[in-house]
Amino acid sequence: MASKSKVLVIGATGYIGKHIALAGPAEGHPTFVLVRPSTFTSKAAIIDSFREAGITILEGSFEDHESLVSAIKKVDVVIAAVSGSNIDDQLKVIEAIKEAGTIKRFVPSEFGNDVDRAQALEPAKSVFAKKVQIRRAVEHAGIPHTFVVSNGFAGYFLRTLLQPGLQAPPRDKVSIYGNGDVKFINVAEEDIGRYTLKAVDDTRTLNKTLHIRPPENVQTLNTLVALWEKLINKTLEKSTVTEDEIVKQIQETPFPGNIFPAILHDIVILGDQFNFELGPGDVEATSLYPDYKSTSVEEYLKKFV
Image (cartoon, rainbow, N blue to C red):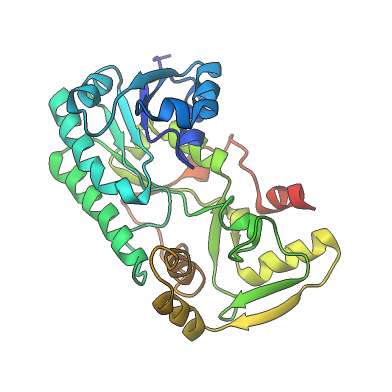
């Protein structure tokens, strides 16, 4: 059996990055992370968790081109998991990959909605547009790649039933957006990491878009609230928030506070996570890796009962 590719994760100390990095050893990949010098102090606990998992820590940054090239030359696969404000920095990664000339696969920082299909309002529209720009740059450079569409992070959306400002599912009141019947998808962050790492050596995902769509995680807000009510044996007080009200909130809330309602609008009003059929350039993770048991919506919510 061929040895698994060596993987470099850039942005590994970020929200989704740490799950992707830790999935490397879990999936049997020799794993490296690129860490800024300042991050060794500010995120020491995360870095310690990487060391305990057997991950190799490399010092470097986007601004230090030589450190970027040096790190990339040590591996076979590069995965970027940078924040929205650093999406453009992936152009520097692309240049470094081209210079290194040894990379078998690049996974740019996506891990959300399918940006080529989404019709989001501003300011989400501009964030998505930057990700589209990176997709086209990767393709133009001829770099072997996989784009990962993970849909909603469970820790952002599922744990609050899409209610802003909460840290756990509501116990008394809940807002229903629109008619509440638009389908969307939430995936546990650990599962996003595992599916991503499963894909990096898979010829079936080469130059494809990998969609993570566990069937049991496709929900509407109405079905999600009903499931939560069943788990806590209580009926919540419901109020309707119309599309016009969400749009008004987006328009009247200063940036960056209006990013969440703009993404919420894209998910629960426009339905951009599940309003399209997969095409020849798409593959679906749970179909490719049926032996991996991902966390269902019900299993995730039970943690908060």
